[in-house]
Length: 511
Ligand code: TNX
Image (tube, rainbow, N blue to C red):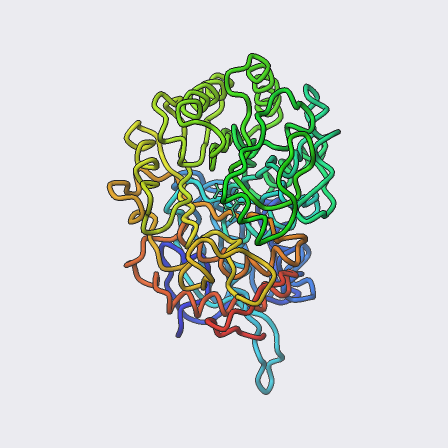
């Protein structure tokens, strides 16, 4: 019997005996929230509604319970011919057990005397995540993506046991969150996107709605205000806070290649160049602005983290950059939140000591990026790993598609997204120094949910496995196994409305 196709691979999975039939008579018992999630999933996958609250149980029962005591987010799932039990150590664990159950649900072809139907293979699964933080990132600044798209993105992430949604809310091209303390930001700096496309922003109610929707699926929201670079949009609302754009050869080259106009202080920027903008680091008005913006963001955000950016500040001197990151991480720590910054801030001494670094260099580091990342761990904090050549979801896998970029080692593959180990990226930083893994989707070329799905699936499943599953080298943690398991998920993804790209590296099941 082949091992059932579960992604991310569980910590332990064993096959045993005869399958559990899923019929209109299947009873679902136990935790009401979890039962509702399971029913939605069963209905989407089967097109019918097996497993109703009123199921007689004559063909078996699915029991959903929470039994505290195990590791956070862990669950145990057993299935045999008469019963399925999913027991979570907490509500998140139970929710993840249900996601596994959705993947296990298999269509039966039917033989003479037995009609075609659905079943759950008999299994025994004990599962818990390798890393506490498993994130996806959506850039809503380069192209704005509204509440419905963000919710769809959350559903997709939750189905692969991600527990954090990082929203890149601000960048040179737009400011996407309404703030009561600084209403000019969205009034004057939110209406455009890359390439002349329309912009948009989240009202505070939108933001709260996203947070609640994510929480119901066990994801926290990590908002990012990218500072002190990637701040050209601020110059539309508060011109006095920003320096003149620094036009480097690299800025000219990107604009020559991808089109658009050079950045002009106080005017919307709709092209793709990076690294030209900077806040005025030493002005009191900048300090007052940061206190308002970050104070209000901390109030609006129940999750423990605020992301402060800090990447590609080529328009800021290294000394000013270091002083700024020290000041702003200390401000955020004082607001009771844990700051996250991109790894560049590791060059600064005296960051708030809890500051988490997010590494976006390559799996084999170049240019001293690993040294900056290591500084966070040396200071007693942890890292989130987002190696760009492995799990940047905006990298192209099809040279002819208009979607995606190629700067992280060219056109990529699902195999490259899969074959890396978080504990082998930054020398000297093993599991203990790693908070988790995050797969970012930058949206310079990404306009809608169809574009998102086409770039994100299937590679995001490889990122999920890097964050959740036992380290490569454990049984089943191979590209060949992943390839087979992810291919088997095609029909589930289709029934959930996910427009994944059927990469030719993978044999996709059709039913
Ligand atoms: C680099 S990686 C960026 C983003 C771009 C992305 C495109 C990082 C922290 N910054 O500003 O959108 O490349 O792939």
